[in-house]
Image (cartoon, rainbow, N blue to C red; front, side):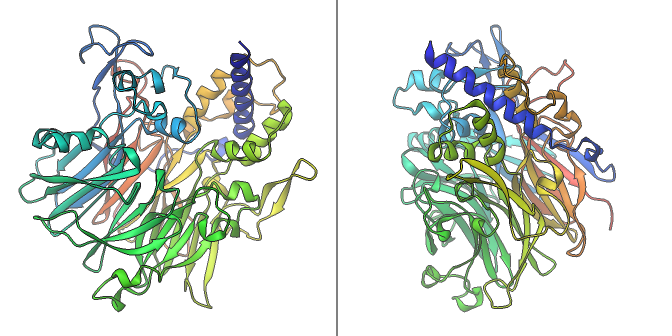
Length: 569
């Protein structure tokens, strides 16, 4: 009984903090989408399971004679294009996996939008060795969209039918997080159980499955990049990459598609990669309990590719240099340790990048370091540890003439003083050129992807304001006065959905393309983008697994592949 009271009180404190964050939203800024862009839905996840209650067996279907339809496949997690062929890998219920594995939330929850079963999932009940924190995992899928025929084909069955080993690799892959291609070979990969990494290969010409492999030396995978005729891959070591990282160069072929050279050895996992000024640049995620700045989220650059044979070789593995890290901006040392590096791109002579902030992760870490005892102190801790994304650019990186500009961010950030147990605003030492964090929306928490197309730089975000509603609902019974002075209406429905912003040049601020998930406000994030001339293929993130009724007035959950057509220059 006492545990339930503690849980209810913790949920209520979190709800109050969400209200306080909502008070910072500027509803006047929530203008409509730019109607000069055209968003065309090409493919969408369909219901693939029937849900009949937490912990209960899944009835047959869909169609569902019992229970309700559920769509598990939530993200277009890996995305790559060869001509008219668009290959992508999916992720099932990453929001449940993140809350379980990162935030230690194991109490099942269900609402009108989604369900997370954790240890009550049939996956765990059928396999007690399966970790409860990722009990909502389902095998990912591989899809091929052909722009000529305008048809999408699920290629996952070919993997499972090839052999028992291939089927088991797919079953134990925690989402296909990355996709890339070179010389007609398509590679898709994702983190797997036992702190390893699984890869799957297809022949783009024949569209046939070539095989799969497990790389036991690496525990996470982030991004593929083509650069100067080579294919590179950012990876992490250990659980979710917390023990370090690397950049690999593909040395394979159709006959042997799973050979790599390690061309970077890093103290942090490599996140997004791009080619800039003759080098490869990567953002990074922090190591576990970072004690030095090189283990924080940051930006790293490689040696010059032309110095290799050609491109990067194993001799370059120790030649990478960190040129920026989170502590150069974040004033609270504990919060700084929870930053992630996000999308990165080369544009207008600058390297652009953004930050990522798992909702409540900084709060969880701060509570472990500085436990608070009163409700007011707990609310303050939640509010003061949340961050919206910051957007940066730099040039002459790694040189004495290095220049780094903050484009969107804060001049001051809340900082905790353990000696006085109080929070105060401390100068970041930066003045943003264009605006506040999150492009002015405090719920923009991930800079998920950047891409250049048609002479424009696009930035896609995750916006967690729609999910924040559920936190408010769960804490609605709390009797303490609402210290924020606002209600749930402060979270503006006009801003629900991931954002897409566009920099028209390196001398102009970003312009709003969409703040509504490209037409579906349940799309809480723009997970992936690949250029197609002046246009983009966009992969969306939408974990609302119980939103499957096409007859109601709410859009549907599950991943979406969208073609964005830009206005003519």
